[in-house]
Image 1 (cartoon, rainbow, N blue to C red):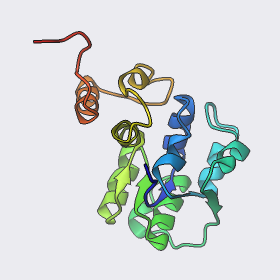
Image 2 (cartoon, rainbow, N blue to C red; image 1 turned 90 degrees about the vertical axis):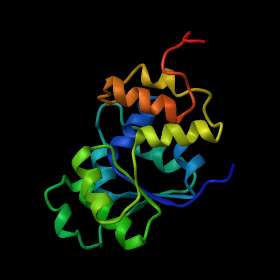
Image 3 (tube, helix red, strand yellow; image 1 turned 135 degrees about the vertical axis):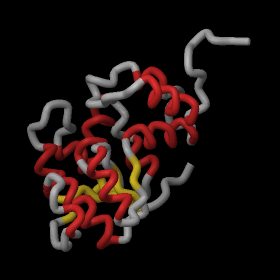
Length: 169
């Protein structure tokens, strides 16, 4: 299937996908992926983060210099989230990839289409890029997720997988 849209990435989804061994999903799902310079800097040396050169070796991934004005609503966020939101607004991105709750709320409040790691996994399953979401949810702490049972159930339902294995009629 064809990749769609411009996505601007914060560090958390990139780190989570790398930890899960699924960083390849970014260029498979998005036609263009922009990593703001502050996000690039956050990735350098962080545990479980992809080596920056490896990230740039992926098709359609580029680093964008911070030359965009940060909206007032985003000034309380960390630098990577601020730059991701500012870059997404300035480039009129189709998506901004953020996992942290506050960053997601600010981005959505500014009219951005916010996607997190779990939405990336669900879309990857829909496009048959991965076989199952469930095995990827069994390592939430390793990947930086903090998942409630209710959220796991919603993700599994959205990906068309039964809530519990072996549950039947």
